[in-house]
Length: 287
Image (cartoon, rainbow, N blue to C red):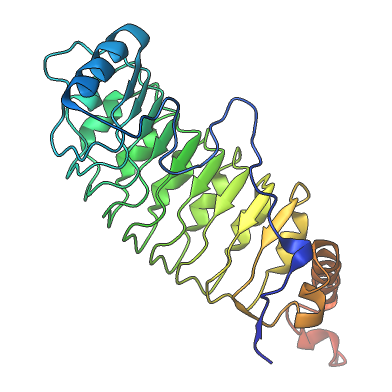
């Protein structure tokens, strides 16, 4: 029987959960957003950024970097979301103290190598753009939160395993078919959102992570690996809209505790099966 777990009340994620000192993924939202913009208000925003180190030019239909006449090199937070940038402005890649960069909802097709200059960057939201590739040099940054949902990604590079500080990863709403085993090296990862991709298999290596929240809904997953019983920190598992066959429907409907009991039983059954049949133990020796 093919099961789509679409009514899992006990497996629903708790909304709005935050972790201390880590920005939670919330596309396009930063402080001090202004709904109405004029040329003068843009100048004022740039002047304020010089003094405060917080640049907010969200939602202004910008195609070009507006700060050429301002010294913004001390910027620590930059919100360029909801504009029409076709690339990450090279000037932004020179903001050495930058810790948070929001590029949500632009037209960006690639991440330039110059981004490696941002060695203080811990939060990057580049969701709802046109990325088809995540470059390997991206994972040399000290990122704690990476949001790249709603792009055109078909794969995740093996080098993601180098992102040792990563606590939240959102790669939902792409076209990813396989997750690399190297994701099992993300030993700081607490939240993983792989919703709405083309995944058929969950890698066993994820079972080694300290995940608190895992969302793999809207994929093509048929089985939760028995190794996932080791996800002892997991509080929220979202698995609806998958053709899950193991655990069966009636188990999934009962929620996380019953899912984990089932996985434990499956693991025990597998442990009891002989890995191979040694015929020498069955045939009497003749001397």
